[in-house]
Figure: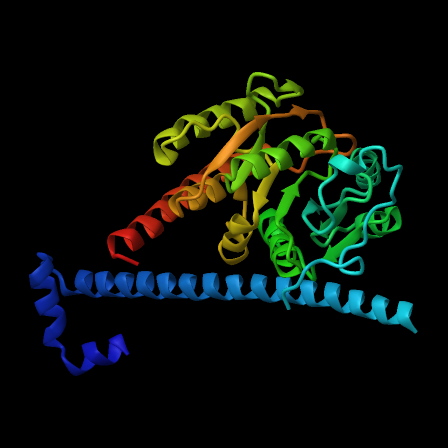
Length: 80
Length: 265
């Protein structure tokens, strides 16, 4: 997507290079790619953390339900 | 799902005489929680000693997916076992126990280690302190006047001292043994920890969460012992990771709660 933007607007890289004080447009491209990678990594890290928390909550819920189910089963066995 | 504990919810340990019956916690009031990972060598002794001191006390062993026969040994000894489907780490295991205790309606939950380091005789002191003072959490401390027995290795004592110094200004209250796993909580803290609980190395972060929620804690002197059998899983690498992880966790929690407070939530 970022590449598409750069291809469609070739002057954009020059503008970015000028804004951050870089003389070489290639360096601006590298900077852009680096920022993009950092953003993707940060986003993925947030997603993984959320999934991990959900996974732990699910595992805890499963264990508790199994515990209570075993109790219910034991109770019914005693009654019958 | 909520309800008072019944005899079938949590199997009580064998009653070993009722000479202390008048001073025992009421049934359904106290739950002793024992998170365990690969502790088959110790768990039976811990349970036996616990029921010698508190006959018929409700106990749940949280088995954090042990590779050995911890769950089977605990069940054979008479404890109920909450078996986690996969390894969650100490925080996840303790929180699972807290969630269960909260759903079953317990008023007080006291957590002890499965390696025999905590003396079950001190449970009574933690229980009484929770009841009498109304604080939300009571920590069994190795470093208070009146504490006795094994303290820790030199390296761990240094780590504890570091966290003690760091936590004093954060908690606005001195804490002598912030890494102690001998902890009792009342129902208010149980409700909080059922929702929010640090998932790795929970003791220090739990204190910060508690303090930021304007809950109170108190320390009482307890006797600590070397582990009864087996070896600790804590290595130098894990200790370093522990310090970094806890530091980060403490500051994230401070930011989280203080930003919420400033935002008026």
